Amino acid sequence: MLMKIAVFGDIHGNIEALKSAYQAALSVKAETMYHLGDLGGYSPFVNEVVGFLIEHGIEGVQGNYDETVAHDREHCGCKYEDPIQEEMANKSFEWTKKHASPETKEYLGKLPFSISFIAEGKKILLFHATPSKNNLYWYADRPDKFFREMAEKTDADVMIYGHTHKPYRKDFGGKVFVNAGSVGKPKDGDPRACVALITIAADKMNVEFLRVPYDVQKAVEAIIASGLPGYFADKLKEAR
Ligand SMILES: [Fe+2]
Image (cartoon, rainbow, N blue to C red):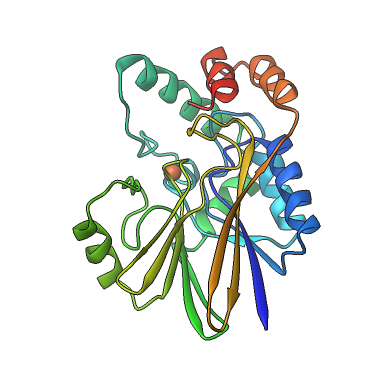
């Protein structure tokens, strides 16, 4: 038996990217699909993204952005590398809190912190960033000690998460760590949507990162038309 799981990380209001990612998951015959939260911000379609996920029965976990938008917090729980990025991020956060509908906020607020299930005898655990915090950046180059500490927080065999927008797979200590990358705002230099496709069999596990072309120009124009900073349109094209 095989199980194919498609995972959509960090969609961030980019409905064009999500639609294409979903079609790609269908075309490779994924049996189940999940999202990893951070459904709004940077692109304008948070309500449409939530509507699409509900319509297609795609369950998922709560990201830092979802939690903070749902509760109208002061800060999104994001980290900044420079003052311009901070200023732009604040604009995006204010825009998203203002435009997310009450129904959207209710959905975001009710998302679970994590989801676990068994596939082919393996324990799978999905969360946004780490097993205990939704806003810590778990990059591939974290030392092995960090991977060990995170693994000790759970009894999962496979951990699937996002938040950094940079995909990777790492096998360590008998466990598999998968960062699913980002559907709607990749930061690894490749502007195509990223979908993690995890194929699990009793004796092995395969992880692929599908890169899905979509109409980036349409997404860029929608950012500009929405009143969000053009800064995010540039970032989307550059995948930075
Ligand atoms: Fe995040």
